[in-house]
Image (tube, rainbow, N blue to C red; front, top):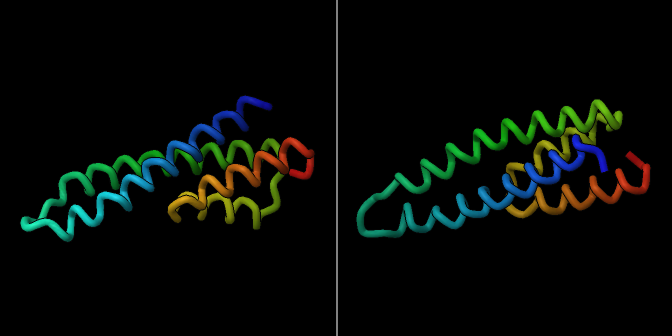
Length: 101
């Protein structure tokens, strides 16, 4: 496993966890008696910054391993859908270890 692949795996899992936290904080924002946006806004900001780092790690890994363009798009979009970043990370890891990507 290369450093680029390890960095991608860490970032995909971190972004996935923060995205799940963001989705879990939405009921608190909308269903409480008072309108609280602080937790959701903070978690959303952190997710946005980490997503940018995830995109950099995807680009780094994709250029080193010569990913097809559709894989780059799939993996990049996976960071925006809850739990899909975990699925994409496992798929990329399996293909990189097998030598298919």
